[in-house]
Image 1: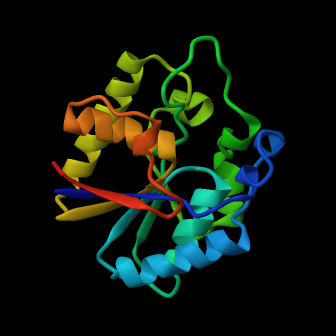
Image 2 (image 1 turned 90 degrees about the vertical axis):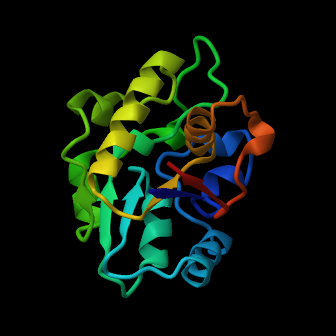
Length: 191
């Protein structure tokens, strides 16, 4: 199985650092929308594809623009929600990284499915600041769920820290912030 991790396009919370990190539910910028549309050329989707999406506006907008006109499965899951990288002790989730509630997701993105396999606690707490062992447990659950789908490739629209955390786990080597994907950048990993 090939996992294709894609970072969301540029969003409003990156435009005026550090003040803009206090924004809740930041949307894509015009540049971010353009970046999401370019994904159509790099990764043309079909109705047979599955796209997993983090439960934040910017990732859901990226997937919506990229999949426009294609009736593939789009599944929102907290298994790929924002993750601080590296984990810093005693830090809290920033407002820009707080997940949306299920009801709001269904309201704003009615064509998306919610991940029924994700634990209730993960939908409410996420794993932004959890210790590495707990992240590993959640990541292994998600990867197991993906393998049960028996697909040759699975797309994952997420965040720089989350993608880097998954890459570090799957590759079995230490990574740093220098390994972050750029906006709308991607990594392919065979499992």
